[in-house]
Length: 312
Image (cartoon, rainbow, N blue to C red):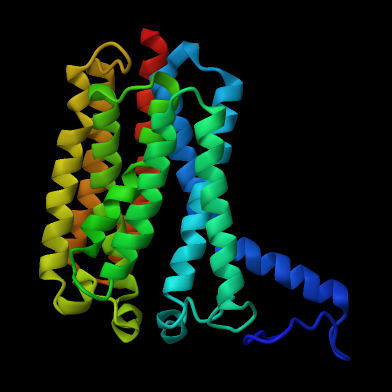
């Protein structure tokens, strides 16, 4: 079934109605980018639990996750709407609902807007701190109106995109405390710096597709990979330093010697994968960086939450 702009046909001689409905529901689910949504929810929840400690309230956490999840899903749908043309030029995105012609672009726009507006309003009314809703709205605007349009314009889009990517735990932090504090800033910086080697590794793996789509990622203009690998190392070092910031803060996030040792250990493993990529700039080594980044995030979140509960 393809929907180019005309009325939706629910049945054809070849395909039963039930199959078409399942495909349509699957397409709407695809618009929300479920894997990214799960990662967003993990960081929102971690931010809330780190800030609240033993004072965490189950219903507040659930309300925060629902609102933030709706906003994240809406932002993903808008992202697909904006990139519907460039997605046709990339193998990994060509079968998305819009480039494949299974959904009309206007219904995607309405769907994304509805999710985002509902999510922000839900946070505003269901969570005590209005700042959680404000940060969620800021995350949406930064991702949709700043980062996404800059992807074909400048290689700095990855750094700019790391800002909305690091704001979800701040949503959780505000929902728990109503203020940011040094602990919240530290969590933001950890997620911000963590993203750069992570996304540069992905961009290197798919650099030819990104170039074909017109996205100006650093690996698409850095054929040798030297600048990319050096940038990954720099961000890896900054990540270790940022992960030690909670050592200066002892009220909402405990960061004693145990946390410091654990944070440095995890950061060094991540950094080591970046160093190996610098020495051997291959698809395999880029994937190793990606794997290391995926392991690092839950590990550092677990360390932060463990110590938050110990101090509460």
